[in-house]
Length: 161
Image (cartoon, rainbow, N blue to C red; front, top):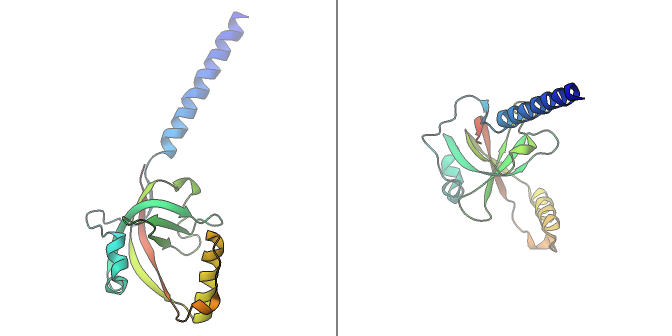
């Protein structure tokens, strides 16, 4: 009986040690792609005030991850320094795979801001989807002009601890 108790203690300690090791490994910084330019961060709100000014040059942003693609991990949304504003980071499927566990962590991303100009019909579809998601009513006739969506196509992303 005494030998069995000692073996059980040894196994228990090994399980605790392994669990702690696995937790610490997963809690570290995750790095994707090339080098993040962390010394030259531009606020998301600054970019969104005049996004067309940032289309031609590389930009680095920082924010809390508020959304991650559940299907392929191909995009994340970072919260801005202004309430209710965020910017999506989008990669080609498989280029970088952002984990769902990243939600709530900080991220820094360097890349190129892209402008996606929607048709009027596509704008109405997007607005209807947003309204449905928010539980609001939507009147398609209220949308009279097409909109543009901006997203960052990153060359490098660091998801911090």
